[in-house]
Length: 117
Image (cartoon, rainbow, N blue to C red; front, side, top):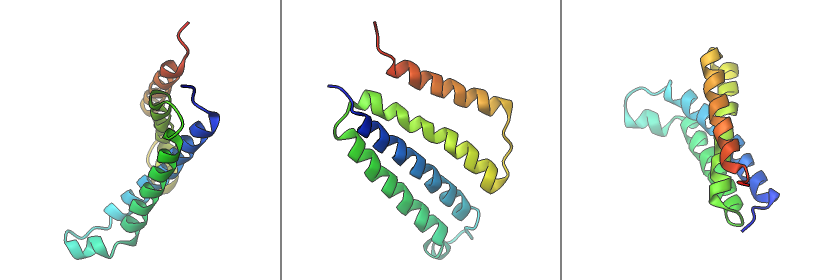
């Protein structure tokens, strides 16, 4: 079974959208007050969960017509976006170690998707 480019685009889009879900969950988590009512009143957490759900729908659309072994590793591209958003929204440092770690992950993804020959 070949994996169409459209399936890859769906999965990559879901990964991108999901990275925003992570940002919203983090933004909501730092505002929790330690009780259940604060969880239910936290719009950032609610929107973050909804964004994750939306990204899952993109993922499902993508894997419906492609090889899971090709598509699932593409989700790792979300790590790159999450690192960028962490810097932009939370001021987290971008270190050499983080860049090397993400490079290793992406190199592994590329190797998984390389045609054996």
